[in-house]
Amino acid sequence: MKKRMAVFILWGAFSLASCYENSLEELSGSGNCDTADISYSRDINPIIAISCAISGCHHAGTVETFPLASYHDVKAEAETGLLLKSINHEPGVAAMPKSASKLTDCDIGRITAWINAGGPDN
Image (cartoon, rainbow, N blue to C red):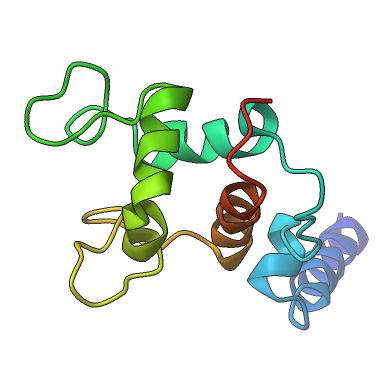
């Protein structure tokens, strides 16, 4: 019994120590941020759906703000330049997402790449 407990403790200590050198990006898998061949449906829509088009923010039918519930909504805001300015927390615009952490550099890079590619509906 003592031997099992010692093995368990050593295994736990080793497991915790093995993560010491890893960054949050490495642990979350975001260290490999591919911004080539960005797709609205695969890459952009999930970011918007999780971070923007939620209840109380930019959801469909919102009266407090403009919606970001469809491709056309997102494309329109991208074309004005406000989408990039707000997610980059630039001066003169409201920093988004409101009351939440800034989007990851990878998510901002993907949105930027999509906008630079003309914001295709793909």
